[in-house]
Amino acid sequence: MIMLLTMIFMFMMFGFIGRLIGFAFRFSWNIFKVALYLVFFPIMLTALVFGGLLYIAFPILIVAMIIGFIVKHA
Image (tube, rainbow, N blue to C red; front, side, top):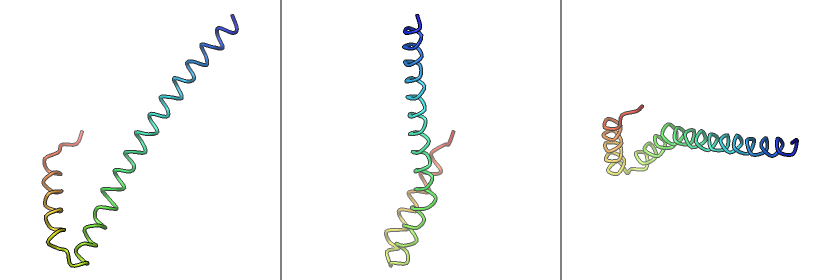
């Protein structure tokens, strides 16, 4: 009987650990997206402007603004 309870406990623990790993991946992906949008994207656009590539940076900024206005956040 104890062996059966141990096996049930192990299966439930693996399920719990699996859910925690899935949560950790979703959380880290969201942190990466925030860092990408708040840090990398503005630095990239600023570098393009200072590098003399305003004709590339301006359309990218316009497209990003249009997408930002169209997409609704939950």
